Image (cartoon, rainbow, N blue to C red; front, side, top):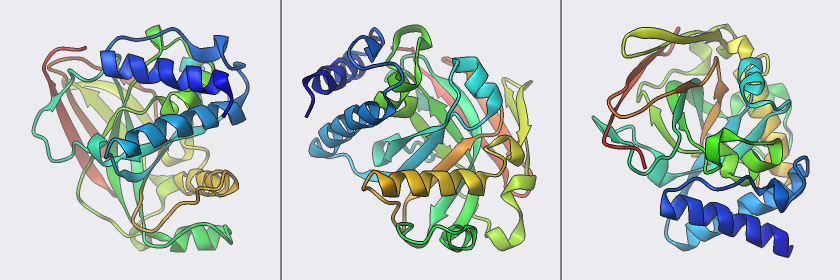
Length: 262
C-alpha cells in the first residue's frame, strides 16, 4: 500500500480517536485523486473491522446539488456504514463522539439481494426489499469541513451516525423520485427538497453506488442498508438540537441530541 495512503489513514484515525479535527489529507494525496482516496478509506475500514465493528451497509454522499455547492465538490461519493453508527434505538443521541455534526434527510434502502452483476434499472429496483425515512448525521474529521473530494472520500465520505424510522415501505407503494422532504431543527424549517434532488432519483443514486462498489471489487450485498443521499441541504446541529424529517410516503423520523461536542 502507498505510504502516503497509510499516512493519510493514520491522520484521520488519530483525529477520530482523539476527538480533535485534523488538517486536510490533500497534502498527502492529490485533491482530485479519488481512486487513491478510496484506498485510504479502505485502510480505515479495515482498521475498524479488525477492531470488531461490523459493516452494516453503505452511504452515498454529495448527491444533492445544494450540498455539492455547500462543500465545493462536483461529484457523488460513498462510504461504509458500521453497526456502531446506527443510533435509531436511542431516545437521545450523545454528540460527545462527534466533531462537527450536520444532519441530512434521506431515503434509506434495505437490500434483499446482492447487486454485483447485471445492474439494469429493473435489477436495481428488484433488489430493494423496502425503503424508509432516515436522518444521516454527517461529520468530518477535517477541521472546519475544509474538504476536497479526496479529503471526504478518504474520511469515509464524512460519515458519522444514522437514524432509521423503523417503518418499512415497499417500492410498490411509492416512487422514490416523487417524495417531498421537509426537515426542521428545534421546530424551525431547516431544509427541504424532493427525491429528484438526489441524482434525479434515489434509485439512480443506488445504481451509481452499485456500479462503483462493484468496480472497486466490493459489491453491495443482501441485508445491507443504503443511505441514498441527501434530499436537501445539510444543517449543523449541536447539543440539545431536536431534528425531525418528514418524507412523503415514508413518514417522519426524529433525533434528539444531548451532551457536549468533542
